[in-house]
Length: 403
Length: 234
Image (cartoon, rainbow over all chains, first blue to last red; front, side, top):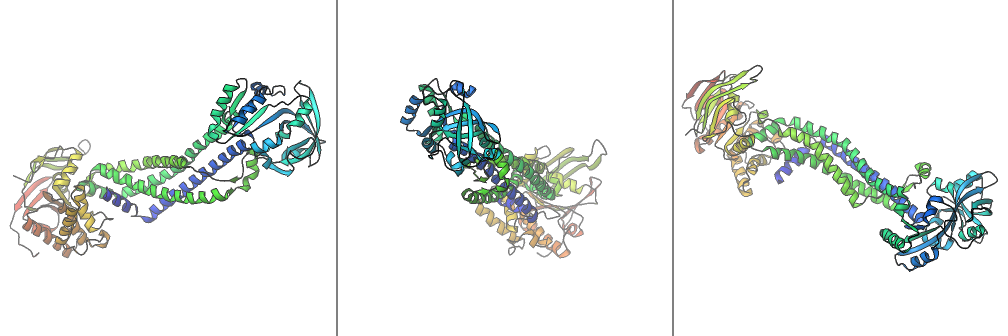
């Protein structure tokens, strides 16, 4: 086996330029593939983490009818009991209650539909990182009366500036329209322009006061110490409060689950596309090498090297060539990923497009060990398939080729 | 007991289209220790005969016996194993493995035989010394002259300790001095160690040295002459 290994390795380097070009192609292909996968993974993970940390959190509790109807009267009747349960659960890092209603924002310029989210500023700071999206002004824990935070895009559309006043009109629990004058305390910019256009934030107490009711909350957002506990916490809450709808982030935002799953599929697809392209290079190189060595293979068969060994030798040549390229490609990719996973990859040139889609443009690429496992598996399978044809052709050489 | 025996050996190429009768019922016996040349004009069937005796090709009819074993109907894998054990080959174009050194080329066939490593190393060195390449053992074929490459090929053919060696036009690509040197080595091995050589050749120098000359014409043995040849220096 050692001799076969040496023979195969030396055979690769008979034509250093040819093998070198193929090696470079595999190296660059793998490098590009792994880095691309890393960027896509990073974007997806950042998107998922951002949404979980800035708004969705790990678990949410609602009145099930609120989810389908969206009326203000469909609040959580068990809010206080649920809050007590959550406060006593050691898996819970923090939770915040939200009063939510759909309404309109009216400025001197125009009127547009928005979802009004009434939050408890202190609890919301502990539970989400949404306050970090503030780009100007103050958060809702300022002393300003009837403060509202609006997205930069919405502010631009309405020609609104800090300190301006807007009217929010919404439905109360008795299905009556209520209006209130709010002062623009701050502007925010999340990762999604669409989100920024469609949501405004006010203090829950202000909203409740204007609704003319006692404390009502439509949503409890729960941040856990461990994401892996989400399903268990949701299950225990559902058991204790069967009237409430308890959902994990995967259920709340199926698109996030899809993003995570898509990441895996994308990785396989990208690697496969790159490797299929490279496979033709491998096939071409190995066929050329085979045709040049028909007489030599005939000689090997003549002197007594069996066809299985000939097949093994040819496959080993492909495998060694590919694995060398893969090793250098992966090493380069690891160095690249290491560099950018610490500093981040600034794709500011795509910032506008990324913001439309809700993606961050400062990407921290991520490739896990299992990702590398999948990539390697795809590489090995495609390489072996590409190598098999020349190897089978080699095995069928007539030993009389030598004479 | 004949070392090699062919019985009514026939080979027809393209039997269904344009039949070419390469061998027409050849009956032949080659005994242990012979130094035999098969000569004949191009197309006479000498290479086909050599391929049959070497187990490289299948006859259309007839049989080939090596050490009384009929190899005519052996499966391909059995033939390869048989060749590894019983037949040594020397080719016109040397056909060494270009990425191996002389030592590795000679060792390779013994590695295929799964011999002991120390035995392989010892025998490879002995054989290369015996063909006068003790100083060039670590040279690759590209660093050797044609004559030296052919001597490595002879050492390789002997490495597996075969029953006999088939040499297809071994001197065809060599200059006179190299050809004579190679023939001296093979003749010495034949004389001193009793190794059987069977050549296919056009080369008058080989025919002159051979103790038996089989002449092929139109796929049949036209003449089979055993002679006493003058011993050349070694």
